[in-house]
Image (cartoon, rainbow over all chains, first blue to last red; front, side, top):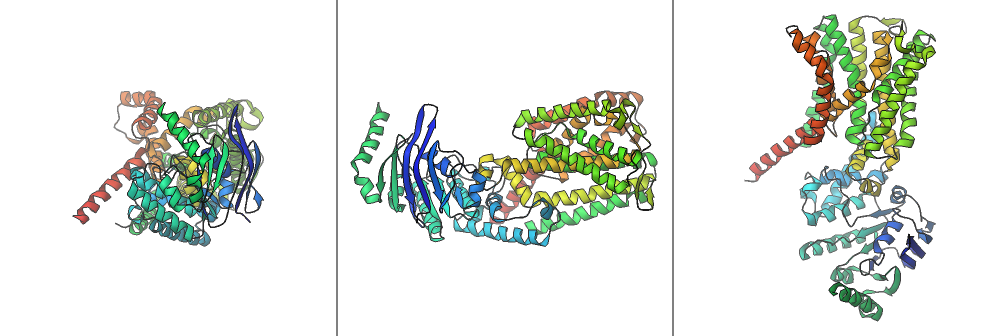
Length: 257
Length: 336
């Protein structure tokens, strides 16, 4: 059974059809990429799966449960974490505190427990801190724990968002253009982090423009163009697919004009 | 200094400060000064709650004096007119103000920024009209008098120093509880929300729930302060809870700074003492006193605007920046 099943998802904004009857499946343990020219509907798709938007019609099922229209903070609790194309870090907090905030869905202490510093709240806090340290080491940010997020170099900000998303203990990670703005060394580092994440047991859906990275890391790819799915398959086949080449060439020709 | 030693030093300092504050009546015998310091403690209780609301959850309230008023009138009416035992009346006062906070928060926290501030301002004005007009409950403009002193069982707290101890005892407990909240998981959720609402949602934080919690909590604490005020002073009238009081309270949290309890508490102490400066410093000339009284409102206004413009994170933010700077200097020194 697939972990994430998208069925006939359509999203209409006013008169614009952003997604038009898109269907695909993501299986447990995969790195699954969604690619396509600008305006293909990739971000809309991500927002729908993570609960930041709702489909006009169609269904999204996660681990066998219909989740379309559920609020983002509920979806995180059921195991869907995400990063953002424009990073949404807590700029005035330290790198460590950013990751610590990610442990929110896997901890429980409420106002009363925290106010009274109950033993279970303290124990839970200690575990959350250990987990945050472990994740910082995993993405290679342990040396920056006390740096403010706003002072972090651009290339490391995306890794921080990945670590924060991991702290929610996700079954499915949605990464929205994780390599955008990274140089080639940073992209290599990202790829190795993503492999580590997969080995730790999370399934990933990646929206990405860096074709080198996509072809390298993906087990499976779906290609969107103007809201429609135009191809789906392993990287080898996608690279040769005439419809995909056409869509990308069309975009480049359009950009030149 | 490592984080652990710093935390240890901080909690040690907090315990010492609390002990010093509670031991103060041993040294201070002046009744007026003790009364002023009691008012300082009352404001500390309100501001500790507003530090959560403003400094952590990022919500501006121009209506907290109204919650203090609800607490004061509830406690006053129940003890003076309905003959309730003091403890029960205080509990009811806190519950009713918290409920008022909840009732205001649920619809208006879907509003953002200035619109929320406007809603709380409207609430403050409405509450004050109710305090004036609901004469059978509040005594109208004449106020509610004959409110008995606090009493716990057979012990009546009818001296200035016992009221001082009552108020500051409550303040110390409130500050300790609030510090636990903001350092723990709820505080992290609030700080996240203030940093990026989308980012916080992606961390599983429910924005409405967190804001409503912060609002209800701070309204309840304002109510507690009001209840203690009513029994310490014995008299409650609408002017104490007018919009100006809300603005003064906001000036305290803004000056004190974001993501801090100590900052707003210190600012509450400083700005409350400023209000009574004429009685506290005997040598002041009449003209200085008159000028201070005339310009008080402007001073608070300038504090709010100035801090918002130039140091939006307030005193606490300055302290954080200074700590970071000194730490990075030592860090560089160690590396060299």
